[in-house]
Amino acid sequence: APALPRPPHPRIITIANQKGGVGKTTSTVNLAASLALGGLGVLVIDMDPQGNASTALGVDHREGTPSSYELLMWEHALEDLMQSSPHAERLFCIPATIDLAGSEIELVGLDHREHRLAEVLNSEDLVSLGIDYVLIDCPPSLGLLTVNAMVAASEVLIPIQCEYYALEGVGQLLRNVELIQQHLNRSLEISTIMLTMYDGRTKLAEQVAGEVRTHFGDTVLRTVIPRSVKVSEAPGYGMTILQYDAGSRGALAYLDAAKELNSRADRLHSHVEDGRVST
Ligand code: ADP
Ligand code: MG
Image 1: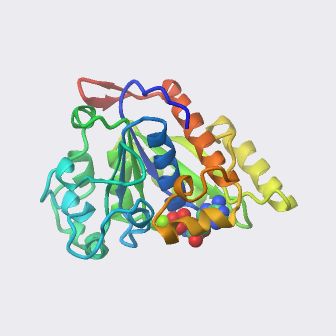
Image 2: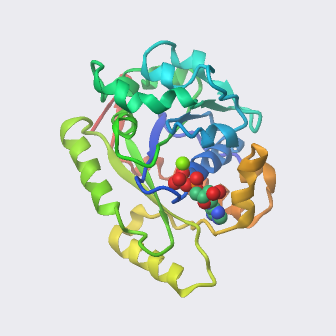
């Protein structure tokens, strides 16, 4: 993979869509691996109790492993929870274990319940840890785990599957992002929409992609992720597509998408001053 220029400051990106199976986790781990293979420091925070991102990144997430649950509970510092992924030099993951499953409820009773993650993710620490990107993989819901991810981030990336009902639920997601912007995180922006599971043989995929581009303009990445069996096989081997089949269409698409995402660092509205994100 060609070297990628470092963004001027760490970017914290939440990958969200309350619809399941649209490619959130797949996009999180493959973008993360692509960015890291480009030489950037990348931390994935797995916020889905399923732990699928942790699996694909090849990190331990058995019950009892220090995880994103301890991060939310403020029991351990960020750097103590980061595990190195064997897949790339500067690729890290804070895994999700089954302990996270009860936390949607547990969080309700805690102080700063929407800001638990934001409080422990600040750009000064990220800079000193050499992290250029934090990618947060969300569960398929708009509950407190996703809210925490959105309050901690400055960007939302929405994967949209090129299938029937692709835009179903997206309106609700946009309204939720707006509420977060109004009440909890003024610097949040929907910076990126990514088209996933594109099947070039069908007219439908083309129509959906066209519709999404009409709605969202240049927020949509030009790179489209093809539907490919290999992409879906990789996690079964504890890998991303970049390890499983580096020359495949899926791998090349994610490398392109990562490059495009990285090239957009300059056009963001938000900027960081004295370690604090502001607009
Ligand atoms: P989410 O995290 O939004 O629930 P996943 O990333 O887990 O979605 O993807 C849902 C399913 O689709 C998984 O089985 C995954 O392997 C598969 N999948 C994701 N992206 C692709 C793709 N580009 N081609 C084929 N299968 C894919
Ligand atoms: Mg997922």
